[in-house]
Image (cartoon, rainbow over all chains, first blue to last red; front, side, top):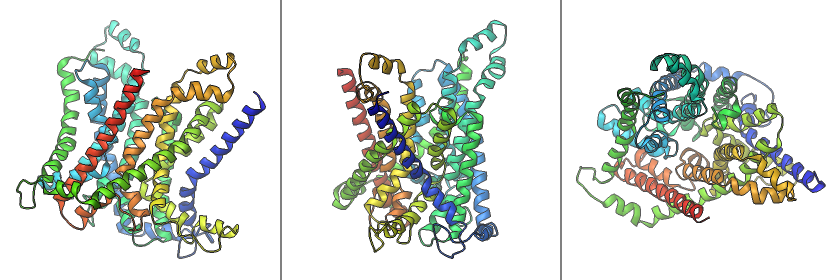
Length: 268
Length: 279
């Protein structure tokens, strides 16, 4: 390695250090300022207190929001797995005409404007008489997160040695038996990774929830969004910091299940 | 494993029906509503307004302009990071940590990330404090509300997408090609520029497309960081639904946004295909 190349590598490493700070700084600032003793946002924080966390945990409307977000994310994720895994299986293994188009349909919520999906959902829900109900939120979130489950499951099935399935068949196993005893255990990490992605994406979503909320039916990101437009104080930093902790937990879980590198580059 | 026709139909059909019912049909309802007046009569007046009035064109163009800046910025930040993680890090632990750093913001709500930038860029925020402490300026610079803060915020939201897309493609590039180039006498930069970078183009294009389309349609981040001084198209759509309550016109704006995005993406993909076929 010549001196020029060594210098180049050093510069790149330096750039990455700055980039890492860049990625972490806004989150660190929120977490830091949630502990400040001042009544206004201050970073670096002055003093250390958990009072702001206590304040929002004692507020029933916040607890209700968190509960709603959790219920929404959980129910939507379960449904996304129930719908998405079979779909992925057929798309990857079956001989389906127009498989690519159908796969594109399943993946399209990833790239279409979330605000347009939210608006379309409102109009549809209004027409169906379920506007601003949990049902409307639920349907919207399932549509939003299904692509994550489908994508990781298809990736899992693609990496899979089909010879194992064929061997099981040769040994006399039926189709369903092969699926449950051979295929499923091997793609389980991919499915779980997809479910984790799906859960967190539902948990943090604003745009789709925004159009179907009411005062009593408000997921936590929407509550944050409404609050932040008018008023910023350390309590809202504490609420935001809590969502950051949830994100960290999900990332760590993802790393445990499938390895963050594989999950991030879709090699589940 | 061959799946019998009947099962395949059921296992794929039910999810597809779900998507059709709650994804495709709502778009259809939206589209139909954009062609109606409040009373229910068919009309093209909403499209005439959305496409005719200069204000909406200007907003759309601003939205595209800002998104282009964001795409460029995420490329400049994201490509080097992706390259470093995939190529220059030999420790699996360090690689995992770097991926965690990139993915964690992705798992936080964009409202939280925008809030973080509000705290950083505010008059009493960290950036101003550092600038004043180091003597670069003696008054806090108002940098929070306007086009630049929207670009800064959106870049932060979109950067992980670019990093992960490029990293995914870089991982697939056969390293022996690099070795071959080196064996033939090429230096490190030359190898990168003539071998690695061209091979990573698909990843860059994919990343740019994702970032661009998500930026054009972004609502939360521009809404929070614009401070009411700038509007992007998604904010206008929200106003129609939230404040002005003209659902039909909002629907028309939404369709315009969707269609122009699809056209740009399609055109870009087509020129790519043509280039690739020509090459």
